[in-house]
Amino acid sequence: MKVLLLHQAFASLADSGGTRHYELARYCAAHGCEFHIITSSVNYLTGRHSQADQQCKDGVFILPVKVPAVLHKGFGWRIVAFLYFMLASTVQGIRQPGIDVVFGTTPPIFQSLAAWLIAAIRQKPFVLEVRDLWPEFAIGMGVLKNPVLIRLSRWLELFLYRRARHIIVNSPAYQDYLQEKGVNAERICLVANGVDPDMFHITVAAKQWREKYRLTDKFLVVYTGALGPANDIGTILKAAERLSGHKSVHFLLVGDGKDRVSLESDVKNRSLKNVTFTGAVPKGDIPALLSEADLCVATLMDIPMFRTTFPNKVFDYMAAGKTTVLCIDGVIRQVLERAKGGIYSPPGDAEALAENIVYCFQHPAELQQMGTAARRYVAAHFDRAKQAKKFMNIFTSMV
Image (cartoon, rainbow, N blue to C red; front, top):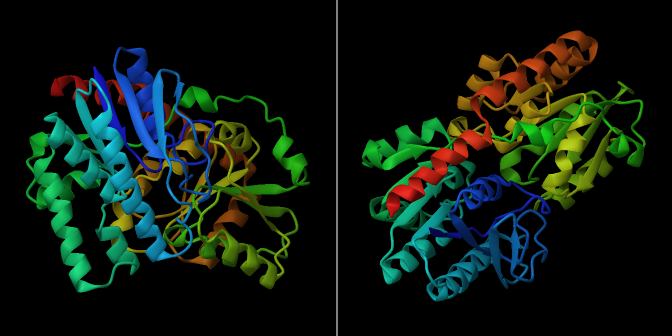
């Protein structure tokens, strides 16, 4: 069986970004299901060219298409990059031989429209994955305001839902959302975000990251992931400012995004000596980096729609055996509280975040206990290998 996936933000372990699809596709490839992935030559987090040539990694065929490096030049240019990839990936997808199933993932939604078009032309089943509730997230963040564009976006969303043979969601809250939109429950399957616990099984931290940034004696608070408007990094910086008198506490922000330059400027203007940016880091290096963390933090903007999401970084933190201070309400909070693997802190509340970090610093035994509980829970309930079996069965059922 040969599955064609269109994914502009696809990342392997050698790239920065989420590797959900690479890990799932790698499992499928090992069990007789080929994945051919059309992706962008431009890294979604850094906005720079990172993939140029076709390659095969662990049986996963990666087919990059050249796209202008304009993702981080503003909203208008971002749309240009999405539309360019949609057209280029459609052309390449139509040419791919031997396709059995066409797989689209959103966001961005334009690539899913391309996947549907390829499936329609090739007369193959179309499977849609909903990873974020677009356009609702964009509307909630205030990015999408024009009433005409909002109506067109919602029409496009429903158009794809109605034409997909099957819809995969990565959060249980998305199932309810889709059913409210009129999608039959039988067409929806949950393959939650998760993690490969074995990848994060590091018993002794090498301290290479601490030594690199001269943080060997610090209580290290780590954030990994995108540095964009949705991620509310400003709350972390405000908490860092409140803790500037605690000389032992240091924040390490790992990742990249269109807000990175402005955030670094903000740190400089505030004269914060307790914040370090690493830039983008390959996903394959994240386990070693997290092994050196004392505490991890996850933040998102405080909008109702973000209460439905399962952020990848939280599962990584848990698999690494680290306690999380979670500034996100909703379904991911339920996971962390069931695991007894961290502390909930109200989104956008920098004072509460600072207080929770100080509490963790002052209670090392409890910190260790929560981290151990987090790893145990995520390995039992969100193991990527178990999810991959379900993932592969969906595609097998299509043919």
